[in-house]
Image (cartoon, rainbow, N blue to C red; front, side):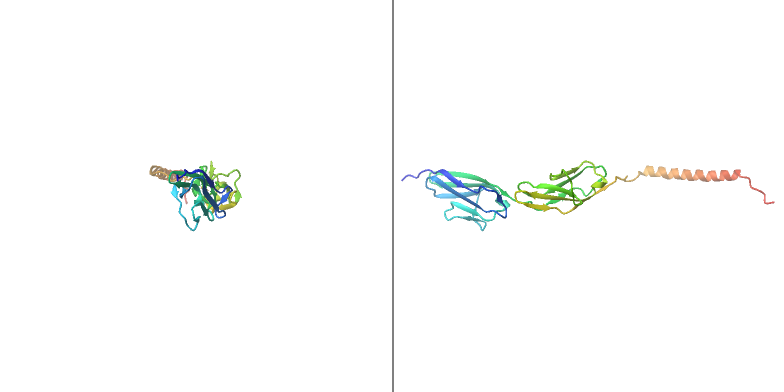
Length: 226
């Protein structure tokens, strides 16, 4: 009896929104035609192994992934094999997650009228919406993960936080406060030549004052005591 080639792969997979820590996933793979003697499951091109997290059916025709994680994101491949043919089908699984711990990065101190740039990082799928605050007050119009201030002023000094929110997972994360100090630029100091010049000028001024004092005194007549 001739072995019939496999054809008509039927690959079933989740079609709804998947959320890490909340959803589960069932995947199954069958052939419409042909006797399947072996099945191989791959994730991102690597063999998928059974674990406490991933459970295979007895004939490996289906797998169950319990309580999805962000690491379950990826391309799943089912291969159906017999002695005369091999067919495969693919499914790209998207597991929404986060945002995870938000963090603000930037310079803690800048000079007056210098540009300032902060970044807010928070792992999230889809990418999180960002809300920036200074001293607890929302900074309007700033929803990107990078906050840029063209010219720093004293009013920009304070505590900055960013809040990352994911509308799909319904979760949010707020960073700890990041303190920015805006200071006026101060001359680092005078050169040795400039200092020497100032000292000489001061000595000349003092000498001139003493000479003037004695000159004036010599011009004032001294009355006789008799």
